[in-house]
Picture 1 (cartoon, rainbow, N blue to C red):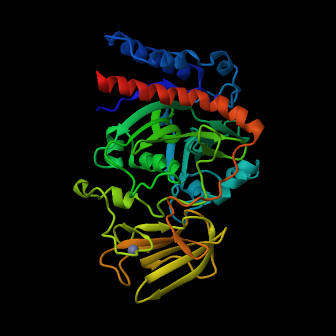
Picture 2 (cartoon, helix red, strand yellow):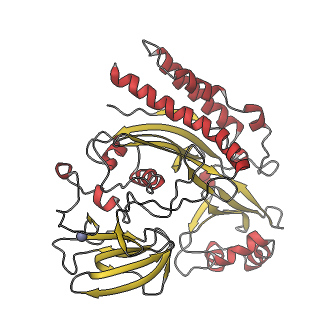
Picture 3 (tube, rainbow, N blue to C red):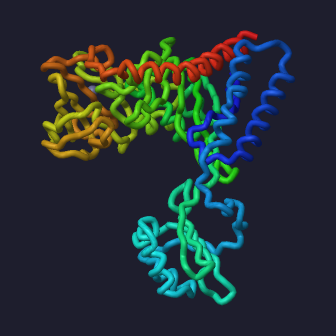
Length: 445
Ligand SMILES: [Zn+2]
């Protein structure tokens, strides 16, 4: 089935970065898109009312009152780009050297650097940093612009001969994009047909990486529905943002996650407010190394199982990064003729995880590790027929199946945060469920 891309303008995450004009333009585009969609439909589509509501729900008055970071009289369009002389910092180059090369006076630079905290930071520029300059007719500095990050400039005006500096926000707009995919051979291929970059596919997989083993559990027919952000700067596509909400249906089991910031940074939560994050990762290795090279005819990359085999084998190319499945302490990092290069990690609750046959180890005995930290790389050292990770999960000295063993849960959201989360989540869940039912409708047509 063909994945469908629908675009809906987002409710504002950063009001001061979004110009009113751009917002109105994007609403116009959104309405045109929906107009076309409605006009082109022969029969009503379930859930379409919901998508229409999502557009109508835009909070325009609030947006128009959003505070502006622009200095009075300083429009981001004030100067055409080609007026600026752009300079990229080379290795070992100081701003002083750049000023000399541009023919500006060291005294002006000194004045600029002593203006405030922001300009003082220009003493620590790095190779690749970007400056842009404008010179007066006499060759002295008129204006200077330093690119702080994707979204901000530090501007210094020296028209009067007395420098003045401010931070100028660039015009950033966020577009909410919906997409969906069905896995036929690999998640990456499904992602590609859904218009997702490999990086975005990884972000999607990472959201569900505690519940789904993306190496061993993915099957043809698995599906995903997601809402994510695309970020535009000065009207041009800049990069993909984050996954805002997603559904993943794995072997008939449905997982849903919503991105939410309960005050200590955004994380992913299940609809009931429980963390998606758990004490242990399902597959303790970077699955993109496997899935991106895998042969669809051999969908299941597991090696032939040996009797009384105490672990799970992940066949993967040599060099695939292997992660600590959970936080803990390295109790063994060594090499022998059976295990090859191996690492054992002690976790809370008398749990030990073991990782065998590394080509190279990346941690030392006694070292503390965090979940997701690279502890070694897949190899075929010791008794191994080919490159693979042999992974064991041991609870109080007994080998367990990490997929079925009961594990301590991470604390859910507190009562007060939960109410707010549910309000936030309900919009996204409605959106995801609409996508899913529309897709079901389309596939039964
Ligand atoms: Zn094994």
